[in-house]
Length: 323
Image 1 (cartoon, rainbow, N blue to C red):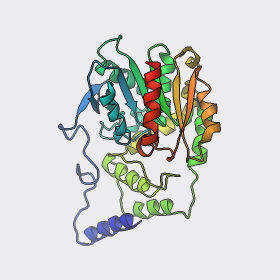
Image 2 (spheres, rainbow, N blue to C red):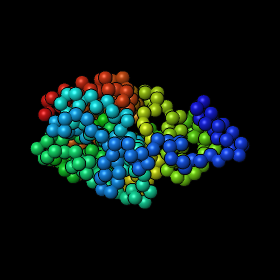
Image 3 (cartoon, helix red, strand yellow):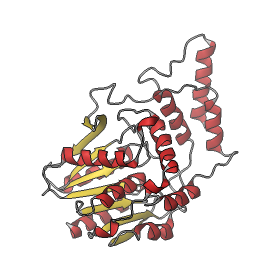
Image 4 (cartoon, rainbow, N blue to C red):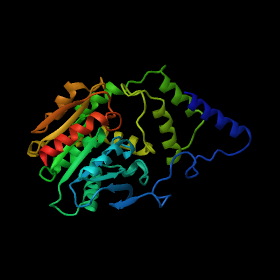
């Protein structure tokens, strides 16, 4: 709360001094994207410049790490980098309109298929050949996206690591969201957002992303008690993707061909996320034919960040068995 109040006071003071508070200046409020800073590692996929990097030997089995959101970035997933020391080639990327990747207007978020095609493009960019083992590791929305890809390509993925996907159809996802996104008019995070919204105005990406960062910073994450780390959150990406799902719920069903994926899937849920729990994990994971359901102790939803100490051994054991 102190940071939010201080930000608002600073803005008010700047305005009273007659200076213009230039929210659209690149780098003033939020980190630069790959379009403004050429030093940020990037790749171009389907005409969009994505923040991306890889670690390890390019010929080792490849793990593509898929972050949550939509709109977040892979900063909270960076513990997966440790697997590059275990004989895996680990690939990270910020999805379109997310993190430090190129920003898009709302109208360009038309279908989940664009995300799937983008993931396929990232795989093709880094993969040395079809003989190279492919592992997908997704968290939250990223686990849903990984499953959407597998649903279309059930025989192309050798191993799958999923952490608390909301659901693999809209009914499951909506149920989980309803348990996590309850608006309380008098609570701290709501008051923080409404307060700072009086002072920070604008519709450009920098301003919208900054306002979203302030609202996220005020939230309390069950069990973790801190917001997940990220470089920059894509407001337009987040809002447009959610609206896309609401308008086309039938397009959010990724279950038709999952039983054709025969390899075991590692499906993790956290000990402390009361909105998820074993019952929801069982409901969602049942769409796969062969699942190893595991609880990660000592953390809530942000398993790859705050639960890594307990998550990593489970991943290593799974990969050693399946590959």
